Structures are given as structure tokens and as C-alpha cells.
Image 1 (tube, protein in one colour):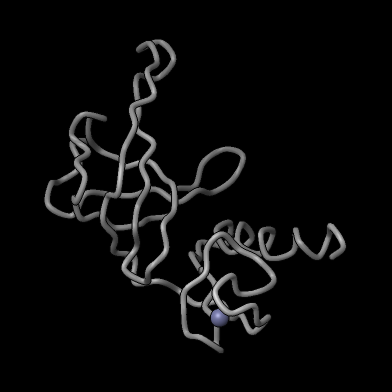
Image 2 (tube, helix red, strand yellow; image 1 turned 180 degrees about the vertical axis):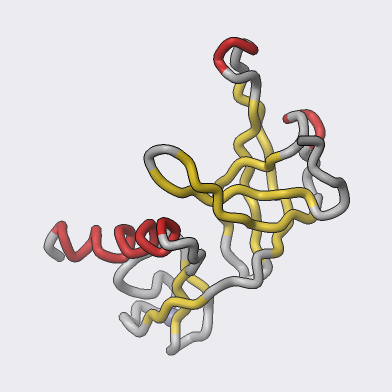
Length: 131
Ligand SMILES: [Zn+2]
């Protein structure tokens, strides 16, 4: 497959984010959610993928702390989140210390706009953000 064709779905994913929309792919053939963006379904091989907006809820699967000095912005977490649609993605849980991110915690996705683009972040459902 040509390289630009492979890059297409990924580029589209980030274009949606830039526009304030979070969408992932779903296979119209086997009905399973697909992430990371791709041209064909990894489950059944069909290229019948459509874009849809997930509900936004998920569960922390694992979390790691990336240590940084306070001058560099302080430590933060990189977490793997299983969203309810059935795919796993990587993101930072916001509004708490890295040690406060717990496996099994329910989180909600949100698009964070920042210099250089938009990214997906997560907020804990049960605790109010400290910021
Ligand atoms: Zn499929």
C-alpha cells in the first residue's frame, strides 16, 4: 500500500482533534471499534471503516509516572485507557498527581488544545480536578 494512503486515516484523526472532534473508526462489517487509525479493519480485514464519536468514558488499564523537575513542569503520568467502545489508547490523566492515577479508575476523555496542536487527555470521574 502507498505510504500516503497509510498516513491518510492517521492524518484525519488529528484533523478531527484540531477541529474539536474526537472520532475513532468502527468497522461496519464486524461492528468492532478500531484504534489506531488504519485503512482496513484489523479484526476482519475489511476496509469498511467509518468514523464515529465515542461516548468518552473509559477505565485506567495502566499508568506510568514520567519524572521531571518542577522547573520543567513537574512529573506527569502516561496512562493506557480502555474506552468503553473496546479499544485501548494512551493519554495523560489530568488534574491530579501521577500517584493518584489508579488502575480501574473511571475517566472521561477531553480534547486539550495547546500550542502546536490538540491532544486527547482524561479527567477522573470521581474526583474534581485540583486545578
Ligand atoms: Zn471488521
